[in-house]
Image (cartoon, rainbow, N blue to C red; front, side, top):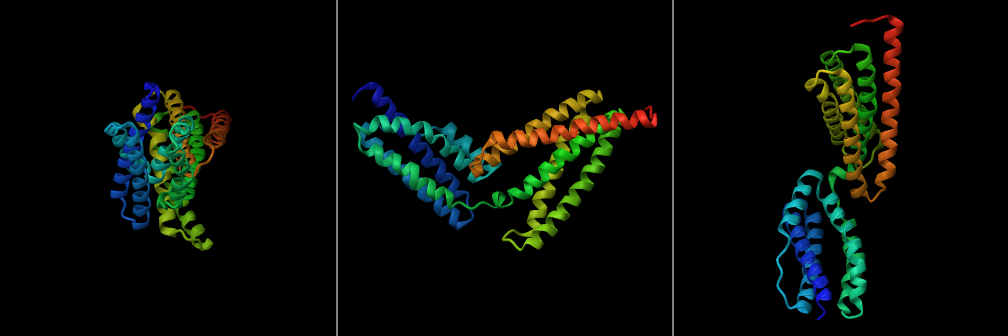
Length: 288
């Protein structure tokens, strides 16, 4: 067998046994029987693919333990749906390699078809609570980013004192978090959908509070209020990027479109509030 060809086969073989182990570990951590069964079925498919490549290569190969550890950590942080879909998004590169192998190994076509159709159908069957309440998290995050970046920008020019800005921001943020959670509870309850109103309110409130704490942290740690505002805006961009990447991967949506929409909205409000804060300070003649 050609060395280049054998190398490709061994790469696929290692990928299959690695993904088998990842799916198996994800399934073991599942309390929900439906999701556990889906992940177990995918794990069985991956192992069968590994055995096909093993019969061709005649080589036993070990899984990539670092990759297994990495995806198990992602599962803990972002949930199993995100982890599985992120892993499957890497299959696009493998598809081209499969096509090159089909002429010599007909089994490669069967594996490619299963990767394209069967496994993706199984992944679509996954049901994760945090994605059912993604709308509530988007509401909490978006409102906190827009409202608090705007408020902090305005307060920075108006107060020019990091402690006062932090105090005002905390009061504003926590009051708004409670208000948003209550609104989400009433909204979900009135819609009569499958979501639990208490859980929807919880996800909205917690997302809002966490965003508030991250945005205000620079004002509690640094002295110069302009540097604090700059760091807060960088933190806001990071939050928008991470959250929208999570939603884009888990839901199969466009990351770029979601990211720019939220970023432009948040920074437009922050800029306007900054100017309003400066304007009121000049108008009222306040000197601190």
